Image (cartoon, rainbow over all chains, first blue to last red; front, top):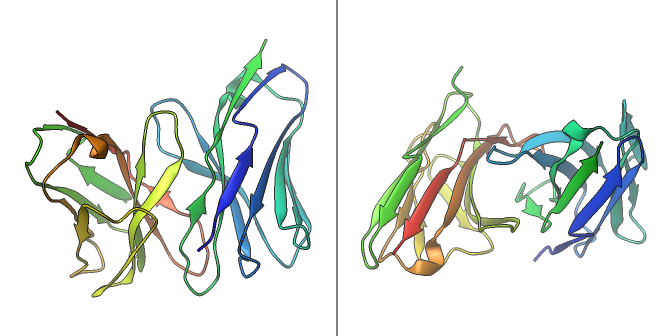
Length: 112
Length: 112
């Protein structure tokens, strides 16, 4: 089955710097790659997603890139702010099964 | 809309006891999921369902059972609780076709 690896497990940045989180997946048939943000004690919430027919997607300070050949995708956060501090999860699934498999998460800390 | 509602929010079980975590959604979503999140860890898929009467195993199904008799409800049954099942359990729903997952608030279960 699908396996999703995520790095790094923790990431500390200064406010205003950029943060990059990387994920790799094992199943070449996967074609949907969302990113979820989970604040402390809260439920995960979708922040951005990308499908396999595009290589990059941006939404204000957040962008996701996908390299299907290498089977990896990344989350980029620019101009980080303290409220970006949270755990971020990548995930992958295939169209037919819709079984979403998550990575192990990255704890991002943004220091003022 | 209430979204995805889970009950109970907190529960302490003794080893060997059984219980059911309830999950209901009012968004008419076909797809529903149960994940568990161990402290400081990622989300592991336990079971999922693509519609009423259809369920399938995820990554960590052992020790759990599910049923899906209606579109709205997707209860998770724990039989013979073990300390290894101490975790936060999240129910989620999705309209399907690799769309956004909407999570409940979570149920924190401790097995002593």
